[in-house]
Image 1 (cartoon, rainbow, N blue to C red):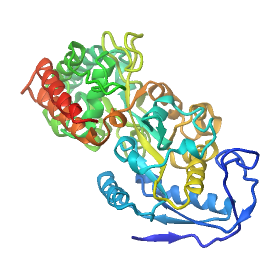
Image 2: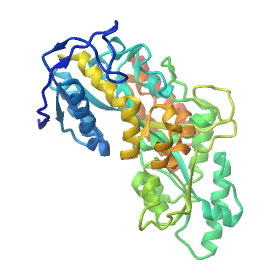
Image 3: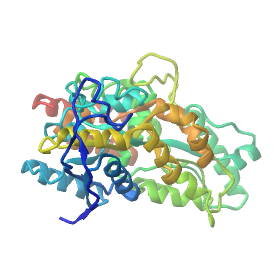
Image 4: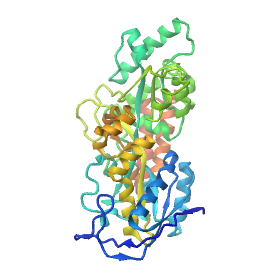
Length: 444
């Protein structure tokens, strides 16, 4: 397994929990007796963030006098998870600190330390509550949120203005506006123009889309926080039926096999009015060579006619965005869990998250940074993301644990059958409810 060792060695500061000498580097300098420096191994390589993870680890090493070994891991999430499961399953101590996807805490929690045993009681203050909840399994804080994503709606502001339409607030308004402008653009000569582009392939991306449709209709989140299956309800069925009506009308038949990049390509080439995607699209769609540079806007996703967030059923109509992102965790098999926890706290502390946002364009998990002048100057669109992130909903991975992959697989397959016309919404949620009940009886 490749390692990049940072050779700096200086006297390390011993970490204690509690007392005047226990201030962590995530928030303050240590003031404890000097002892021999230790080596901490961190697994970086979380997509584009891999370039900044080693830099932050080295900063921590410089400040504490310890040595960090940066372990390269695959960028592909499935391959990374497989590597983690192999190492953790063998109780290997080769990795102290791990970067984990937002849907992995429930899957890996048996192998991760409870960070609340090593960090101050206020360690999670200021973070988006939904992300902290996602990383808390059976009352144990198994990871610190590092950066996040949420589904957003991109739109052609020039075309909305041209045809006298507003940014849609409901999915039905999106449907109607998309149909009207699609017809007008085609009449004007653009036969390839579509009203809406979204991720419809049977994969995890469809789980994200469908969860947004269902939850914003007040249909819940498949499985609630207590582990009860909630998907078999009329609002969830209505959400899926509405989405099915888009195929072949305002969205191409090819949407049934589209992922993020196919949908971005359609929108960026000027051939779609609306796009559901992640925040990374903003800079690309406004970049050199883009057909829509300077012509687009970004808004929270629409909601259903009686939309309510999953967190507040029956509340006001509001957008719901599926959360994505990465977190920092510590292996149970680390020989230095206190030091490893301090490194996790350092990477996810506000100053480091701010630098990550400014230099790498990553969305912070600390709410106050969305009002930071330097963060907003580096990426003005980041301020527009706050509402989507604040109203974001995690996938039910923490509560379903090892079963999450099967839960998601069942959800996106049944949803895909609805989009394809093989099932209606009511039949899909009924079948899905039975499947999930069977999985739940085996124990989440």
